[in-house]
Image 1: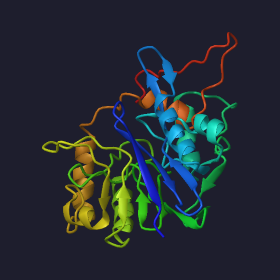
Image 2: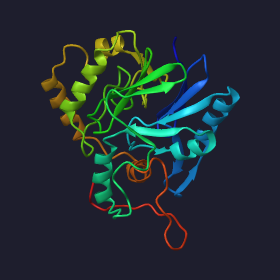
Image 3: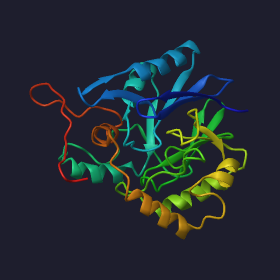
Image 4: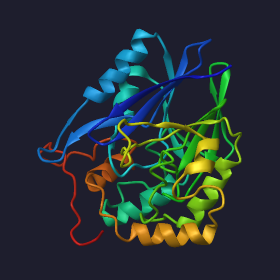
Amino acid sequence: MKPVVEAFFDTVTNTVTYVVSDPETGDGAVIDPVLDFDPASGRTSTDSADRLIEYVERNQFKVSWILETHAHADHLSAAIYIRSKLGGRIGVGSLITEVQAVFGKIFNLGPEFKANGEQFNVLFSDGDVLKLGDMEIHVLHTPGHTPACVTYLVGNVAFVGDTLFMPDFGTARTDFPGGDAATLYRSIQRLFRLPDTTRLFTCHDYKAPGREEFAWETTVADERAGNIHVHDGVSEKEFVEFRETRDARLGVPRLLLPSIQFNIRAGEMPPAEDNGVVYLKLPVNEL
């Protein structure tokens, strides 16, 4: 039995959110949901999430899981909002605690912020298995981009987060706190050991030069044959040298500072201050 996958592409952040469902039972999971955010005005909206919710309700799916592949640095998570509308349990890799500890210090969140993952309903370890109707979701720890990155494998489908992009675009950056190019290489090799026909769904697409359309589905065989950074034959040493050189030239993601403050809280806003207003912090000369 094969899962049903529906993709929702957000053109503002180049993020792909997925609903994966068991066609027999209608049980579903939402992966990497986006909360719209305008950094100029500081306002959020739920247009993207509402389109996903409409799809789920129209098809009468039951959402059991809201899954994050990692703490994103390029969009705010709509996990809390999705849960309030559809139910489900919010899950992320267990090493989110390392990410929380690092950014808790950077943003000086103080003792009221607990870097223990309690903001999420479930923390996943490598090898965990989740029920999705009559199907199973297998959790693979695939760090490198961040320490907490995981891949969700459902039948012949894998949701790889930022670990891999389309073959013509390459691989994730590894210069965020806790990132590591050698670790990313080994995680990718783990994915490459999946069957060649495994369908891989990426969390982003930036439409590589020469390609006219956005795309977010590939296969293990296509990645092994043609990924411009890490195809078969590229050694770990070669990949690390390339990735570290490239990362040193990359700019900071536009929404990193607001995104991280939301996403280490599972998509919940920071607590309001004594005037009832929620504020996001802007550390100066720290990143």
